[in-house]
Length: 540
Image (cartoon, rainbow, N blue to C red; front, top):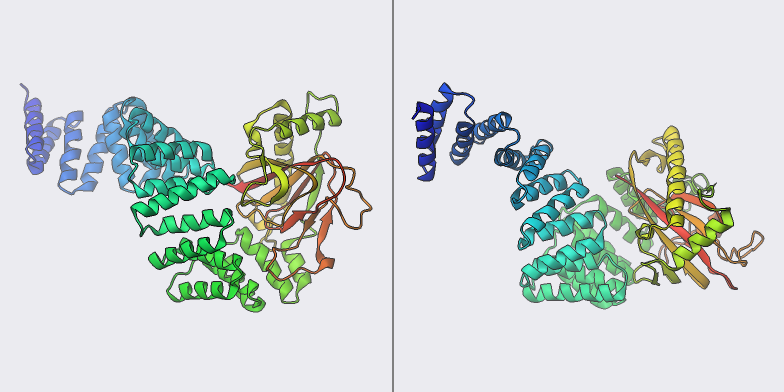
């Protein structure tokens, strides 16, 4: 037997008996004679790690991987070390190789997914965690992380299915019940919200001190129309975890919704006094002050929130209201670009349709039959109207044709915005370089409307009009069925009537506007339906 082979056997034996120092010495002796010994580098990496010499261990793992880049175990070892050492970007391709070369190894897929998740590549994380769960179907953490990755992509049905698998494997885990409750709280039908509430309550049975479950119960009860119970849970969440900013925000929100703006101001001020100061809490403090009738103080807090996070849509929306409440309506209109940034664009008829009426008739029929159509979903702004979920879930010829034309129009619009971008304009300073798009449809008949709202998780929003009733007319002084911009939520200081902007919708026309603009549709009377497609564009 050669000296190298003997040295490797002795190194292996030393590792088996826990003598890492002896193993390192034997490996280094072998490498002095044979620097290309793959096995010596692998064992040296293990021995160095056991001795707390992470730098030497990483170097050894790197050399082993370089000698055999297609070896799955060596790739997994190196990728894991890079991941745990905070070199996530470097770890990702190495762990991807490990996942490919070790097709039965759940750990390789799991660690690759962890790296992708840390880099905000949630599609890759879904692929990795999905592979890990497939390779080891009884691994609750793989299902739980798969659920989290789907959730980041707003793929809630898939996220919920994965969370149910995690819960099936760990039915006594309070956190697993809470995770399912969080996901269900993102939905809008009462059955899902009620199931979410049961999940939160089960989490609290298992762990009464789980503040996150109290917070989530508050959110679910708010959507279910039980404000008193929502407030009680929100208060308990803050009692259990007073330095959790999400708990404070939830309580403050609920206090404002319950007409207790002064108490909300006090809750936010107390958090600030405790040193809990985040851009979100600063913004919410400003909104509470605004609702409490303290416009100058609200303006100061909202300005601070904007300095901390210049793309926060809710901050910008309420900053305009604060200026108006302080008697500076012209400055408010200028700040939010009410006249500058609401723009109408006519879309061309997609290929494959005889003309625009034929296209719109097909698109209207697809919306009426959409698989995710829901009547007046809980917690959303639709009143006496149908709202679809993800419009692109049904990829009909008309829907796909519309999407193609919409994306082309948006890309042209973004190019124009980038060319005009300026730091002096709150809207243009945040033009995204890359974006994601979410589309949904609204179908309303007589008296149906969309109540006042903003789109706080996006940068640009819009509506395309597919079918309109005869009641919508150019010369209507009441603007029945029109879209109105500027009027804030009830409970906030009013917006002067002369400074509102109403826009008459037209079939075939795309209306674009900043997501932070308060807007609503006005009801109408008479026959026919108002069918439109809305979208949100958010920066990636």
